[in-house]
Length: 252
Image: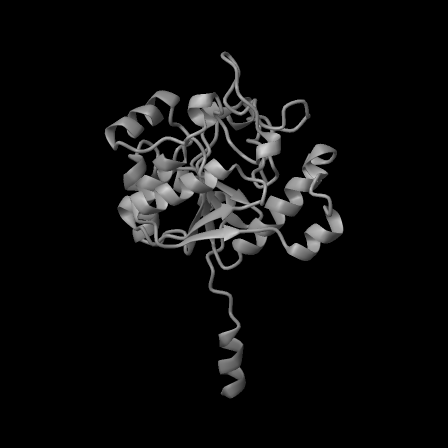
């Protein structure tokens, strides 16, 4: 009996997400108001343990406000790469106080890994993919351990690689939820006005998508909002998100 009890203790009871299950979630919530969808996901625990992954960037306040209006205790994970703008960290503090977020966690790169792989702190200048792996991908993988799903602020209009973004995705066995996938820039701006949300202090200077300071530049009129990220490099994502599949790509 004791052996049986010990065996039961090791059973993994986390949700098992499948492509079919993700398709069912997308179908269930088609046309459902964003807040209502989030309330169902969080209150009914439809996806198990979930955390918000937020950059505290120019549009982050919308998703954070939506989540906080349902449960301000939902964990919020910020990838503090140690290369963020000081204004971003100040904006985080502003939103935490304004929205009452009670579980914001800074995920930082491992000090030993930095010493071995980026001792000068300049890896971003010659190997941005490697820099993102050290400072974003690996810390997020560690930070998401124990969570069944992540909630992101990605929107389809942000770039061509995010067009057609679904509300629910399956990635590496974990569910990824994109509540704002179909929102437009006009809808986001309207939400800021309706709820009197503070804007990121760098947005007025032309920074429309804000990541690490060395790899973020001002966006000029006519460019897509993420064109200021990794300018001059053939790079559009940091590695924590996969590009949206083409409709003709096979789905496994």
